[in-house]
Image 1 (cartoon, one colour):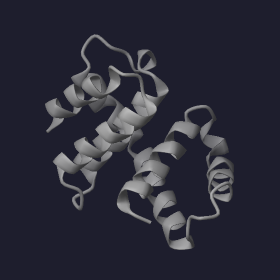
Image 2 (cartoon, one colour):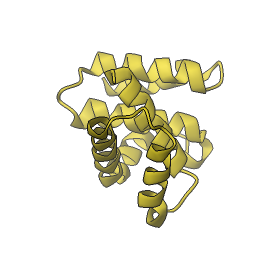
Image 3 (cartoon, helix red, strand yellow):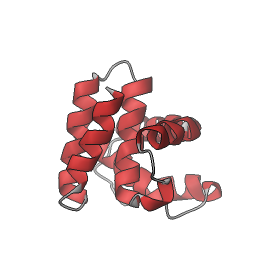
Length: 131
């Protein structure tokens, strides 16, 4: 599976988790992966590990997003936009294997597919301030 496909599945799982409690994380992860039999065991492991890593530092990621989005509360952001931002901020700050420009570009591609028309511009503005 390509990195783009892996990233898309990580985003989709992060988005799904937004509607559930942390206690349901394991169950939601398993259900998500069962719904996608095309995902190999190695890719499933990568997705699980990346989601766990993001959730482990979610508070730090959220604080970073709030510092950049002055005047906004996380609750005002759409769940889709928030999931994309969390993934991109994690990649930019914590994943040395992914160049910041790639993280931004991939976030914009996800936003073009899954968000409203104005969201890519907003997400680009937030991530550009972090770069």
